[in-house]
Length: 237
Image (spheres, rainbow, N blue to C red):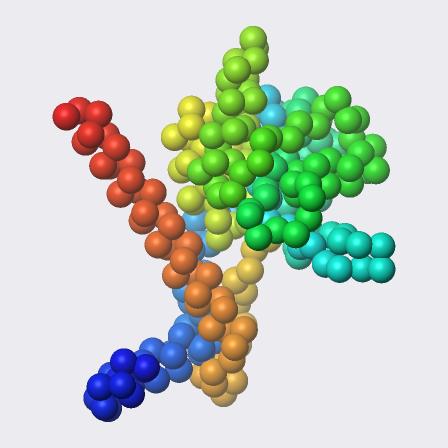
């Protein structure tokens, strides 16, 4: 749109406005998210086989300022509670949290260490909880979890992977690439079946955010597929 204004090209501005409008329509954002989550099914611990470890991916906490300094607040706790519930039903002997910490985080410790304390308050023994080294993305999470499990003398490989349904395809692909046997346990389903109303066609900022998340996740899957193909080609060469 800025390019169209700068170059005085009305067609550029019109195309940008249409894309912005379409991407902000709830009917479009819901359809995109349903497509991303289409292969995932809501499970219970009873649907889940026993494994060597339960791996809970990060992205649930945010740091906020309080009178006592920086503290955490929940964004969406579904991943955390799913991991604790799987431990309570003895699906695996270990619970692993990833040490999510990006450079712009204000907190002094990784998300995984905070989640470990929360899990201990829910009666998960400290010796059964592991936290990876600090990580910044899903590929690093997969690599660090693999180091924890495959470096042990038992060579544990089978994991129950807990993450949001929209993120599961990319996460599962990366953990398999890291040498682990993965049972997918998706949570935090965000798409829903709703009746069509006039509001479904009116732009909403929340719908634009959903569209953005769906596109970014699709691009993430595509990026790693291409990366794996190129890596194989380089190895053969």
